[in-house]
Image (cartoon, rainbow, N blue to C red; front, side, top):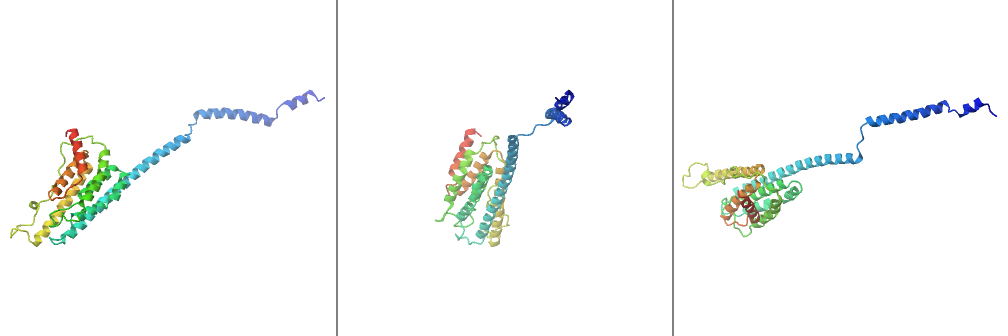
Length: 278
């Protein structure tokens, strides 16, 4: 039989075993202490949600910039087309029908692709672009004898296209919170009284004076369109602004026999104004 002391020594844990056991217990205690002081890790769901919000903000901001750029570029292109047609009209003889108001209507139609894209990005900008297109869909009907009323006039189909595109945006748009009793003034339509070319010696303008009058009228009308555009962009009461602009153009065209200028939109806007009693 082995001596008692020898047996006891065999049952005692070795030094290395003691160290491992003690270390384990100390490590457990340390982990518990650290757990109370260490900040909790963000869960996967929290991280994904935060990233999603950031991405949406970035996407929204980028989309807004893209929409504004498309809107601005479309207006520049619209104005450029009007200027090009005005220059052609200037070189025409008074009895020519090479360029009529129908050409302006067809030119305005070419920006519908931009409108459709803006509808998915910013409906307010799409709304304002359509109104600017409506402004550009006709011209000075006194510029030539055959400026309107020609058999091949495509103005009405363009007016209908604009009416169809604008009406759903009008109906879906949030009603203005501030109702304007009156509207900021913009330049009225040019008349011969605004001509600044000196005295008509024969009672009628000579060739040089006619050229000056036409240039003055173009500059006046361009400034007028720009002022109307800015008023639409800045005024909170978009209902009253849009109605004023459309009715003014409708009445001008009707005096020359050009009809069916956005009738449904005008009727809807008029209804909205009457409903609120302002």
